[in-house]
Image (cartoon, rainbow, N blue to C red; front, side, top):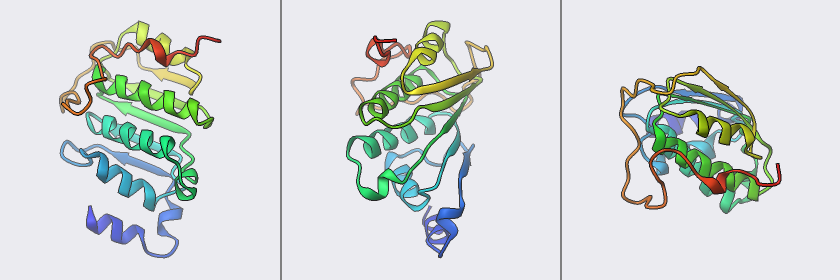
Length: 171
């Protein structure tokens, strides 16, 4: 991680990256790692992430939106692609989307591939004010090769991905 941060600190490098793909079982499994990385690549518009690391990305994005500084506002996330994510990851995603709506940030496009998610939650995501569109491969029982996100720190994250507060009732 340190090598990546050092490389991104070179003049012009951090601002040149707009797409990031993380597909490794032991990489980016801490919210702190995501926060540090996101600060070094402020022009990031698309993130493609696999497994439980997606929950840590969403938690880092929650922190960015709930206490924005000038540098954090430069992050212009437009698209989030989740692969092999479980129901607890989806719950953290809903929490992050709610934070984005509260901060009046632009809606994002979601792409869900091989996720463990039900049709009710897909409907919630499609109706959410923080979501521009949802592209889903139709799989409800995705292959979670890296397992699901699990943390005792997040007692408010429920299994199943249902968050009634995640839907904007005005729509």
